[in-house]
Length: 494
Image (cartoon, rainbow, N blue to C red):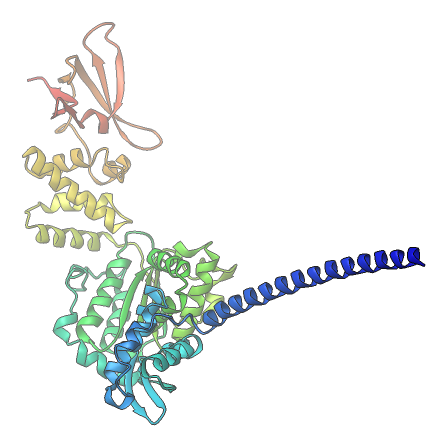
């Protein structure tokens, strides 16, 4: 009997030990669960703060005014406090872009009316920031308000722009050299000039898309910038924007990196006239092409004007493997051709007047005959002749012009040969010449290359084995720098 009791007691002790063990485990589980719940609650609180736009726990702003009722504060004061609260919750770019443009209008019962400049801004603020604004208002006023966002009409914006931007304040200064007064008009660019002049006269009744193309250096950029300046001067209420396509690409990339692409697009679309230069640089840049198509389509749909400059015809520009002409209906396509000799001569005469230098017509004709395709090279070559004259102190004549242009990267000696006969008044046959290094030579003859027609000098060494040499005239007559001084490569021995 005693043995059975002892055995039963042992079993009871074992069971109790097991129960205690289970109880301890349950308590541990319970504690673990409680910690998990607390952790979840804490995480939930953080999530709630984030989903409510991370409104501050910092109540210092509001404590300063907690003794004042809502009716005691004017709307301007309330809105300034709201902006201070919101500013801590947004990046500087987002705050400056979307919050600073909002103007408080009025309070009516439990509604605050806000004004923004356009429909685009209104849509962004309503979609992204309305909850943030209402939460900030509640913190400031200790009262819940709804908000209604309205925007000015396009006409109202135009009137505001006129009031805030008088003509004298917006006239361009830095770009004043780009105007139509200093542009020489010839057959090569007359149609482009007339088309742009019509835009200046009446911008609101012109083709929505104008496309101007031509080779590099024919004055497209000058005309496009002159258009921008003329519109600014004559139509101060009209918004016009000139953009080189490289600037478009760089600003787009910057806006994407800052998640500010909508503002980039709106800043361009908001203009009445968009001038895009060197469109061909966007070929192969698909992301930029996508954005450009959106902007151009939007502007054309809104009746805005787009003027494009390019070195390629619209049929040669491919966007997304489609010809530009397949993507857009171009109402006005203008080609700027090569200027004729009379126009090139007139350009150089005007350049001489601008520089206040006297130059013989023979020299101008020579330079105009050498540079036939590129106005920029034409003017650069002309300026080189003047600079060479100033550097050497010599009078400007055809001989000096040839010397100055010889070796110039843009000059083919064949052009000099075709437009000016280089004869014995320049290189004297039978005369001795001394090389700048000291050796003497005798000029035997002048010749021309059979393929390129380049002028050559045939001369004999007056030392050693008296060998006969041939050297391009361009090298024979050029000047070189020796010990900081400019000297002739070959100088005639008197």
